[in-house]
Length: 331
Length: 287
Image (cartoon, rainbow over all chains, first blue to last red; front, side, top):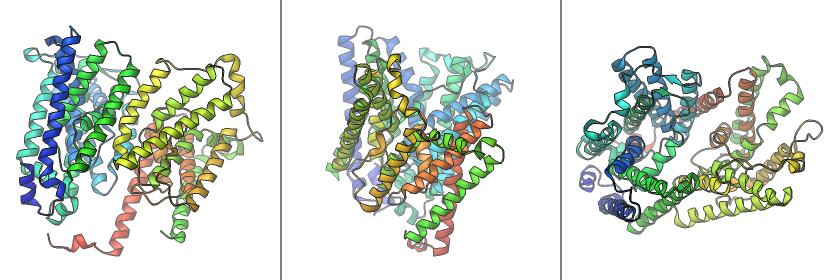
């Protein structure tokens, strides 16, 4: 489908995007599917408490926060801007801003909307610098440091207690038995998939990621697309921050330790190519679910933190090499 | 970039460094003394060595995200070797050799497969952090107290000013400077990883020093002297902010703001330069 769109939009869209892209994506989905099914089967056979509904809900919940941001991140990667290294920091800052507003009695609706607008703005500013030619990695590294400092400033480097139960449902509610974060994760995945595949904006994003020069030559606003992708990413970080603040009833500047790397790992394990123009947010979502399943499996087998990190790191390194070699062979 | 442009570029960056120094010296008496300034530089050894390593990979057009994790592994390894009864110097030598070997291996994989170094080192970042925790049994490892004296020479002062570590850093910078000047093939060198300790903001600080020092991200541009200037600029700023009584967590804010400032200045300069040259071919072509 993408190849068709791209073909129509850009005859000069680069050889790899024409026919191989769907094949590669099917392969990525296949690997992901095999991986998840294999884990489920092995886990179910070897670990009694693994294949229970309760445990799978735990897994989905664990995957949700990473997954929500990974979906935002996938738009950045697909638009050809590599990664944002400020995910963790922006989520922390959003959590602190939300908790701050809730504590000062601005009410749930105002706090929610204000935090999301703030997060969107923080994403847009980074997108603005990137669209001026700033390197995405360095720009987001710099803004990440700024956000972390601001979060410490807002919270005075202490816990901010929400002091009200008004937002509790957002973090701990379970409509139909499924945690709210997981609902948000699933719905967001579907929306992100629809927007990317079925809307004009999504197709432009794919083309811009695939071939920036061709996109610019055909009159697309490349810089604007980076800004929009970063804004959506900011909103995702904002949602994650709000959800965590609501769940714990507080926000603190060292929330979400290591989240950025988890998110990037989900995108990479999902097989979204770094060069942009290919891939789907669904891959990032599956990557997040797969990593959460693996983490849960290792946890039930009492692997220590060090071993779990080592296994995940090796998985990411192998997956990136594997997908890279696959792509080279197809090209 | 010819040597005259390089010189101008470095002069501008040095001016920024002096400006930061003077701004803080106005408020801080400790900046007036040689001893105070030397202490500032001493605090930057770790960042300096990392910045140099990362700078070299950046000049080669690559980017190593895993420096902090490898530094942690090597730190734990060194202490573990000392705990098993090895004396300090051989322990450090072995650990550094391991770091070089790992860096070379990583560089080899990247060179052979042609994979993007940024992506690959994300995997090694996670994996090495896990490995550091495994070999340390998820605790911090410490040199046995009776043997702490053996490491004292690292913290003594030469001429009452600089610690041997600082001098080592200057030596490494000097060698790297010669190396970069007289050989072109730097792409396989991945020194980025031979620092003795690991902490979270290492990558950020090192990258900031490199960028302030004028290393271009697209590779092919940058000097060792520039990295040194960048390092000093950052030390003057961060040390000054700390001396003014700001809490430690505001350092992150200061570094972030400084990095954003440098980025925006560089982007604006590039935009102005492009204007002066005229529109490129692509801008001229009809939409």
